[in-house]
Image (cartoon, rainbow, N blue to C red):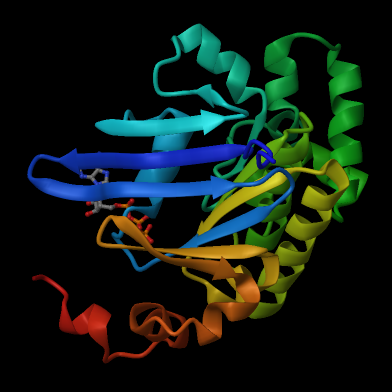
Length: 258
Ligand SMILES: Nc1ncnc2c1ncn2[C@@H]1O[C@H](COP(=O)(O)OP(=O)(O)OP(=O)(O)O)[C@@H](O)[C@H]1O
C-alpha cells in the first residue's frame, strides 16, 4: 500500500550565504491537516527555511513540494497560483499601519478584485469576530490596538482566504503568557475549522507543545530530531533536551562556534 501524498514535502534543502551553511540538507514532511512545529535556537535557520518554502528565497538545492508540485522551479505566475493555498501570520503581525483593520484583513481579497469593498468589509468583520474581535475594531488603525489584538488581526488576515496551509512565524513573540495561550488556542481553532495544515516556527516551548501534533528540531542546518509533541520533553536526544528545558549548559552551548 502506498502512503498518502504529504501536503508539504521538503527534501534535502540546502542554503548558504557565502561560506556560511545555514540549511545543510533539511528534509521534512507534513501530512494533510497536521500541525508541525519547527523549534531551534536563534540563528539556526528557521526563518530561512520558511522563506524558502514561501518562495521569498531560493534554496541552493533540494526539493520543496506542495501537494506533489515542485515549487522551486515554478515561474512567478505559477507560484502566485500556489500562494493562494497559503495563509501566513508574520512575527509582529506585520500589519499595514496606513490601512484600517478591515482593509488589512481583506487585503488579499481586495487584491483579487473578486468582490466589492462592501462585501470584503463584511467578510473582514466576520473573520475578526472569529478571532474574538468586535465589529467596531474594523475601522480602527493598527497603532490603536494592543499587541494581542494586532496578532488577532494578523490571524484574521491569515485565514481570510480560507488557506489550505497556514504558516506561523513566532506567533506568540512579544505577548504575555496568558495572551500567548489565547493566541495558541485561536490558532488551533482556526486551523481545525478550515481543516488546514499548519507549519510553525518558534522558540516558545509552551506554544510548541500546545499547537503541535509533531515537533522537529533544527540544529546546524539539519533536522536532528522529530517526533510527537508529547515526546518532546522525553526525546532522549541531549540537544533537544537542553533546548526544551532551556539549560545554559549542554551539547548546544558546548559545541557553539565550532
Ligand atoms: N539574506 C541573508 N543574507 C545573509 N545571511 C542571512 C540572510 N538571511 C539569514 N541569514 C543568516 O542565516 C542564519 C539563520 O537566520 P534565521 O533568521 O533563519 O534564523 P532563525 O532560526 O529564524 O533565528 P531567530 O529565532 O532568531 O529568528 C543567521 O546567521 C542569519 O544571519
